[in-house]
Length: 279
Length: 359
Image (tube, rainbow over all chains, first blue to last red):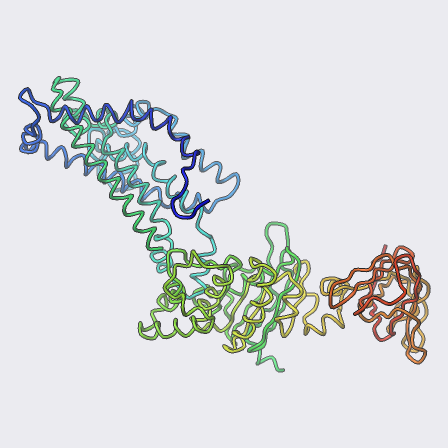
């Protein structure tokens, strides 16, 4: 083979069916949606965006979306990182059991979980009882229909999407690295910040990107756990299409959500790449 | 040498994983500046002993003293024991120089001193030119040298090497062994090497501890282990040997007569008549032909089964009465071909005597 220009690898054609499928059922409709948000009876214009962004209520909706997504990602990270470390360290049956425990909840539909949480998050629910018992709360409080309840519920659904990317990165890390650092005189905290965390960072970044975009666009969970008075871009989009029959508003909110989610994912994959290049 | 000169002094180290005893009360003393190898097959406890010395594993019993201080309960990062791991365990997100600087930075040494120290140790291992390269693209030999420089840069009191050559191909291994020996001598650091490779242990060590089943069978110089193995295991693990089982007969003037399948043979020593014994001799001590008349010797008659030419030496395989006799010479004896019968002889002084296995 000649050096220089690499020959086309026919194996790449294996991606063709999925690409064609995604083009028809994803890229095309999304494109139509975006175009519709610019469409007015008098021709293409950005009036929809101008009026959307000039309404303070909509800024609160964007704020709600980003805040809930960020808090959910943070809770998932706090719970998921230690789990991923334990998972990577474990072996054999224990590891298999942990993996099942992490993946099995995915097979329970969101709607089933959401109704189950309503039991847990009630004023007389398990969480409230626990908080009173430990003395953190003076009296039982309602978690249902609050942002805290929403974050707790959402993190429950998305936790596996944080654990698995971190685990898949950690399991490739030589377990001797920590020992090597210790023999070089590095104390535990130094080993964590200068070695364990940088090693896990690509997994943490991709896990956060996945959970953030899932949480930013979730619809069923906020609808069931907090209801109409709390709007995110996703619930607003659904309202616009289903209730208000305002296709242009729906297309606009959907596009704003899309742009936010895509920029988060692209930013984080750029961060992963920058991280990888510095190695 | 007095006990004060011991840099590393391990007493009664024991370790069990579940019901499996991995170390059964091992003592090991290493003198300042000495190079000692722990040599043994996998599962003999040598790596466990190394990890206990480094503090990476807690012992069930026993004490570890380093430079006079009891470090048994001291965490790894406060021990001053460097380790070169089998996988090298280089930090993949850092450059060559940053790997070497890692320990110095972790110990908060002054920044300008770090730079100079890193440069000095990279020069020592001849990697000065690769300082800014990522460690990922390095060859196995280069990675090993980074690992050595990284371990030495923090000036540990003791350096442990865990099978550091096993990932290298044979040719490179031999040069790296000599190179590393030079580097460690130059630094003057006390070193313990863990290996299952007898040649590696022979090449590098001042003394070798032959380990089997969680115990040290013999701790001696390479020559001492080879010429005066104390147990059949040490005999078998280091170098080739001819082994002939027999029964002890009479002892006359300190020389025991042994009844073997090859006839009566003699060895210096004494056993109760009738007890099982094992006779052994190194292949290069055996000569083809009749023994010289003035030297007390053993002689047997055996049939030549195979000639293996190995360049600088020739292995002659003989057989007699189910015993395989390996003879090492430096040239093929003229007029000898497979199937021929020959007389083999070796000196009484070269005949080693061990207790045999009670059947």
